[in-house]
Amino acid sequence: MSEKRTSSRTATKETAPRAWQRMLSGRRLDLLDPSPLDIEIEDIAHGLARVARWNGQTIGPHIFSVAQHSLLVEKIAATLDPSIGRVERLFMLLHDAPEYVIGDMISPFKAAIGEGYKSVENRILAAILLRYALPAAPTPAITQLAKRADRMAAFFEAVALAGFTRTEAERIFGRPSIPAHLFEQELSPASVEESQTKFLNRFRMIDQGVEQDTQRSEEAS
Image (cartoon, rainbow, N blue to C red):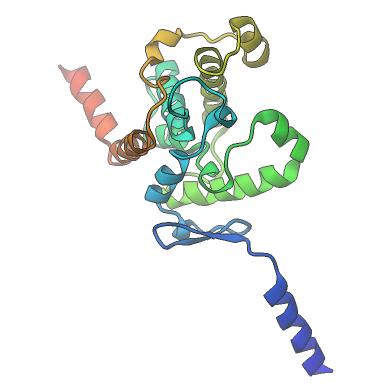
């Protein structure tokens, strides 16, 4: 009887669907039970630079990547609230980081799939945040700022890159409180290599406190 039970458990284990992905760093990330120890920023930058926003339906010779969107959201958030520090800035930069392994789905499709997708996404995001000493559950203030910045980024992208009229974009994303011309550089689709490098450099700058040091120097001068 015990032999049958052991054989049954072994068969189940062997036939269970694979739930992990191997990264170029050599890490193996379990998508259903992600560990912060398996998170590497180089893998995140590599993946996000190769994931297209708007299902690739944007103008220009290059995709507009999730890496670029993340840089845009971080800059918008800092424009809305210049007092934010390392924790807030890194959260803005990493708010879509799970997409380096699960891809980017447009909002209507996410809604159609339901809570299963969101649950996986949230677990991966929590692991990423913990990996970089950020709260796994961001404060309501950080969450609200991220949502505002994300919606504004979507508006700017929709009008500048994805063929939406301003009226359509305002109906879906709301009217932004800051002008688009502040983000012309961030809204320019770039090569994969450039997007990856910019994302990685920006992460390291914020994580090492270079941003705060620069601000203090400017305030003192």
